[in-house]
Length: 299
Ligand SMILES: [Mn+2]
Image 1 (tube, protein in one colour):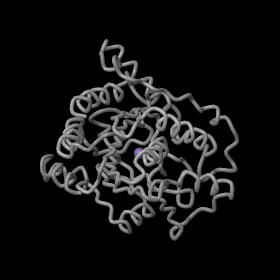
Image 2 (tube, rainbow, N blue to C red):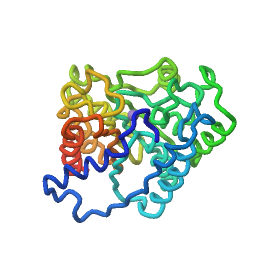
Image 3 (cartoon, rainbow, N blue to C red):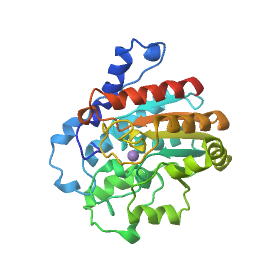
Image 4 (spheres, rainbow, N blue to C red):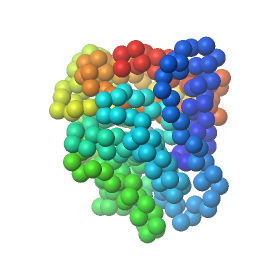
């Protein structure tokens, strides 16, 4: 529902297919909770919500995601979230803030995009570009380009609500396709950004130390891995918004595993935006599964 291109909802099935094709024990002995599919909302008229497409469905899913987290993930439990598009992260992180109401949560956002748009600035209306603006409650009214409907504004505001005592500290990795409205928030809130070239110049160990230090005052860390952080020419175009010149699978694996090992605070890991309909032979899901296996060993 959050993506502009259809097919991301098949991403998790694509991942499960390749796990099963390899007869991997990855899914065995694991507590698995699934969410129902809300895609009937894709067939509804979206004109009321042109600056937050399918936001009614995303709101219904928000309630379901938060309930799933509340009922199944106690505060000390580790969890891996496999999602269709990146709008899910909005509700996952807001839900996790309810089970960590007094803690500072570090977020490592591994993505080609900053996902910092709001209904007031979005050029597309696609909500997978908005999760972080909701989480940071940064609607960016000063740079508004759109006039969302009262109905959109009301639902958007409800998605932005989180326990006030929970704090968020964000670090970007792999950003290379942002808009000026997003750059404004990055500057304003002083959010650090690791570029692909910077990782190559400094090396993984130095980079991991630097990010680890940044998260020193966080009690728990969430890594959000959008597969479009990967280089499509090296890996696959099986994702909704591919951007050239991204990380290699090895680089992104070493970076994320390094953060997990150095901080010992990563409790939540998310993998998102695999789109098998845009892929050849499920290559993106296969690559993501290789990465997930490495993550699972150290998480
Ligand atoms: Mn994203």
